[in-house]
Image (cartoon, rainbow, N blue to C red; front, side):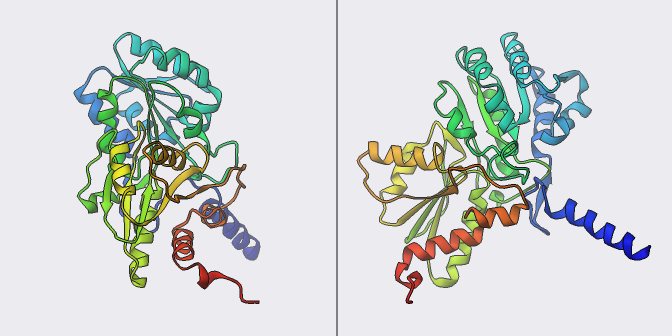
Length: 344
């Protein structure tokens, strides 16, 4: 009996620890719990127009912080994303500043028409704050929003933000509320890493920021991939490889002036995104470069154009080439291709 109980305990621990967690924080890393929820409470205390809405996912998008602190400023719409965005549009038309939360896949795949015609066409101040972007859950294609940015980039009036960490999220909330028009922000939930406050960084809506400079390689990154780009840059220092990291938290409108300035320097260039390589950061950067007459190779690091497997996140990140180790490996291959050629 003791053996059976022990085996059962190990199995339960394995299932809860390494299978489908949406947390991206590493053990011992500095984090902030529910940065979106706490930033919204602080904003709502200053601005009585701010309200929150959820499609039955407040606990899983960190909007439960606002719900519990200010229940009269929170609306539980239920499992109906079209109704969620319709209600948010109505509140915005009455002068409120709504933050509507759900999973990224549901907001983009299920409620696109409501976002487009009810909100974007009218240029309403509705802010969609959506969890589980890209490969941040192992639950497979039904929950992995690998193409959400591609779906939304063509929508007029819409601003798209992909934050790196808790610092980005905390600083973005107030700027989204003050922005004239609809926004879509991919959020990281739970215990979210704090990364950018070590680099004298400040989030500015619509602006890309050079986090570190380097003479040999330029990594243009967005979202959680900026943390991995910075880790890769530090790892490559041991091989005397000098890597710059340009963080692009606002994907639309793209800060083309900053991106083109950095592309103009003679370096190996890669883009890093937690999104399919089709229709996201890579496409935006390459489009800007060609339109400006910059003709050079830009190598994308991102998710493949396929439905991803379910499983443990570390395994999937390696499998699809978006882990820190795989970024380092890809850069070394591009810098020294002869070292990776087969000799048999």
